[in-house]
Length: 82
Ligand SMILES: [Zn+2]
Image (cartoon, rainbow, N blue to C red; front, side, top):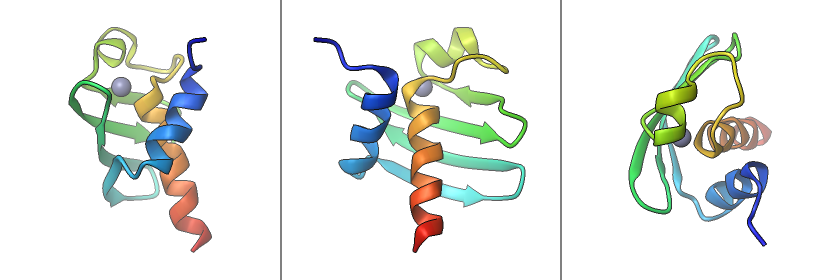
C-alpha cells in the first residue's frame, strides 16, 4: 500500500527530517530530508508553497502541497505546542 502525502508528511516529522530555518508570520523556510534528496521548502500564509522536489517544481502555487510542504506545516504546529 502506498502511503498518502499526509501520512508521508507525518512520517517525515516523526523521523525528525524537517529542519526549520525561519518562521515568520507570512513565510516559513525549511529543509526537508526526503526519501531521496534534501529539499528546500517554503510555505506561505497565503497557502502557496515552494519546494525543490519534482512535485513542487510543477505544482508550486496555491494547489495541493507536496509531502514536504505538509511536513513543514506539521513541524511548525508541533513547535508551537511547546
Ligand atoms: Zn516537496
